[in-house]
Image (cartoon, rainbow, N blue to C red; front, side, top):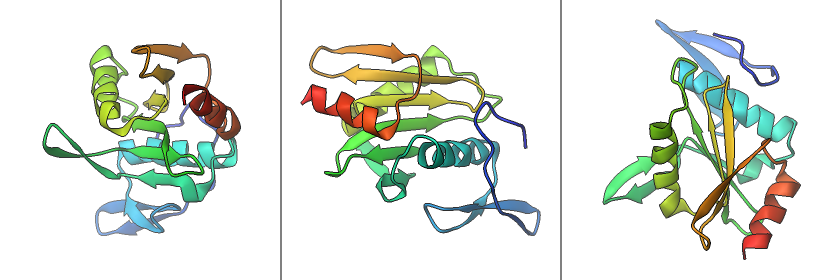
Amino acid sequence: MQALNLPPFEYKLTKSGPNSLIWDVLRRKNVVLTPEEWVRQHVVHYLIDHLGYPRGLLALERGHAYNQRQKRTDLCAFDADGKPLLLVECKATTVPITAAVAHQAATYNQTIGAPLLLLTNGLQHYCWHVDFAQRRNEQLAEIPDYEAAQRVAKNLG
C-alpha cells in the first residue's frame, strides 16, 4: 500500500485467500484491506495517537438515513455527551478530493450535524468548521485535536 501524508502506525496484516486483511482496532476484527481502508486506518490511528481522540468515542461505518436511503459514514468522532463532533470521509489515494466529494460529505453531514468535517484521500486533507446557524463553512489550516474540537463545538451551542 502507498505511503500516506499521515504518520505511520503499527498495523497487523494477515491473508485470507486472495484478500489481505488489516486489524481494525475500533471494530476489533480483521477487515479487507482496500485502498480506502488503508486511508481510514491511518486516520483512525492519527486521531487516537496524535490528536487525543478517545478510541471509545470513534465509530466506523455507522449507518444513517439520508433522503430515505441508508448511508454509512466512514468515521465519526463524538464528544463526551455522545454528540457528533467530527465527520470524516475517506477516499482512496487515487480519488481526488473534488468539489463533488466535498458536496457529498457536506450533504451527509446535514443529517449528522457534526461541527467539523474532514475529507481525506491520505495525501490531501481538508478540514472545515461547519456553522449550521450561520449556514457557512470555514476551512481550517489543520485538523483540530480533541480538546480544540470540543471548544469549536461548545462555541456553537
